[in-house]
Image 1 (cartoon, protein in one colour):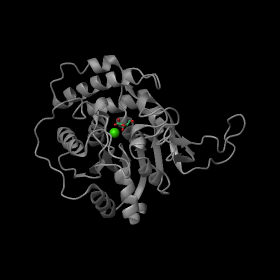
Image 2: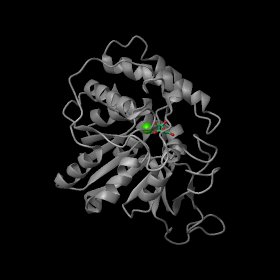
Image 3: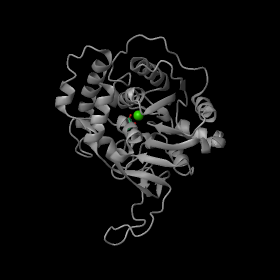
Length: 317
Ligand code: BDR
Ligand code: CA
């Protein structure tokens, strides 16, 4: 199985992503690190522990990390995710608690102690990951790759130009995309294209097992959010968001990626936090690939949404 660390700001779709990662046999979750984003850090930690306990991931170490971005004040998205970040759901009681070290230290230790390079799946603002790369550059060759959910080739969601995770901490994203670590960007386009339809959501009605009931409640909330944001890419049903990024690690054949020069806009109020993806490189006039595309990271351009929705449902149900 693929050894991974998840960095999260749980968050409804982060909750689905954690359930998938813990329950799917292709992944071996070595640690989960928390960062302020969708909701304030303490709430992220509480939600993350609640989901992991529910999913059967009690043995996975969890640590609290950066509570605010490198430069900006924290600006959460409770308006999207409910006051507590997980659609105001209460998780069953559990006995888990965070480990008594900072998330950046848990990342460092987990990477350095592993006998093979690990994949980091980052589903939140990239603050923890940027601090890790700056404080402990020695971890670089212990990272197989970073796959982050964030950015967009086209329109943003937090602003016209910027996706939430990048907008929340543009400097951190800038550090990651320029780090030289093999990196894949899973942006808003695939994010909104992996959806569970109304019939699937209804099939969770009356579920009595705790996981099924939780997944049903989270999907119902996401269906509403997806509808509100449908102006961006016209999805239908509930977009499983961050959970799709986990699918891309489990089943890379479900996405089309292209290496491209990607930079983060930092200096202009209107575009701050935008991922500027240059898709021109290596293309001839007719759009044919004429030479190896140049670039710093791989960008997910297309996703097989049905394939990933099925992968997700098979694993969590
Ligand atoms: C991203 O921000 C959060 O709302 C989601 O959890 C996802 O990581 C989407 O912009
Ligand atoms: Ca998230």
